[in-house]
Image 1 (cartoon, rainbow, N blue to C red):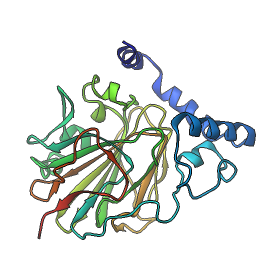
Image 2 (cartoon, rainbow, N blue to C red; image 1 turned 120 degrees about the vertical axis):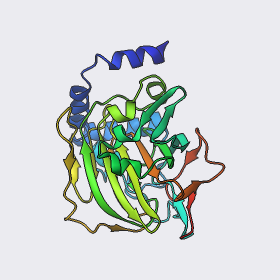
Image 3 (cartoon, helix red, strand yellow; image 1 turned 90 degrees about the vertical axis):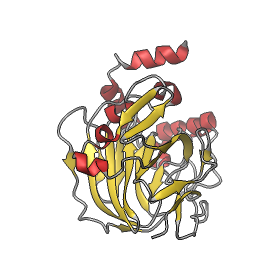
Image 4 (cartoon, rainbow, N blue to C red; image 1 turned 135 degrees about the vertical axis):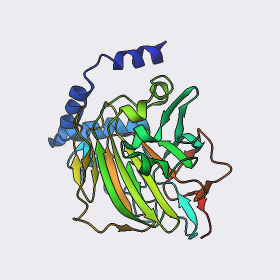
Length: 285
């Protein structure tokens, strides 16, 4: 009952206003307040503090700086197999498998189309027909930086304004078309095996999404799709390189064309992933 009530409440909550409040609170610099927020969060979510690069709480100027924290060198091993696809994030597999033509599975009984997710021209979306997808949920306690799952060149990035429903399991299982309704940042890549897409999905209380190319992108309820300028940073990325980070938690979706890759046979919904571990294999050229 609580899950249904939470989902129903989101239809009437001023989600963008609440998210803007969270944005401001997460950037308070008063040491007493931000230290309290960090310490309580660590305690509530049992965050692994041994792997964090900086000292808690004093080395972090704000709660948000802690939330998008860096890890110590060696805290994550990047799989070295040249053909491997690695998890771009720490998180939990929400859904994975094959597209049915251009349809992805959101949750049992709920589908959505790649055309709607990418908000792009149909020819671009058709390149992924019957391809592979993996949806990974980042819980509040997870490391929230997103890394390249393979060697590639970033060829386009588009910000799609939208709603800010929560992306927790209860909401994903009940709100139809959630990922194509929420705001998102869509990154298009060229790999040695063909194109690939990685989508940052915004959510309730995700104050913004940041990347090395764009800086911080604030949520916007509506408007046109923004084609973002990538000229400020090298667009060639190696497996494990930083792509961006969520300022508060959310979901990533990785999509590849048919015949380009296969997921590991033991990659299943509910699996816990660590950034850098192999989740699939690119096909031979």
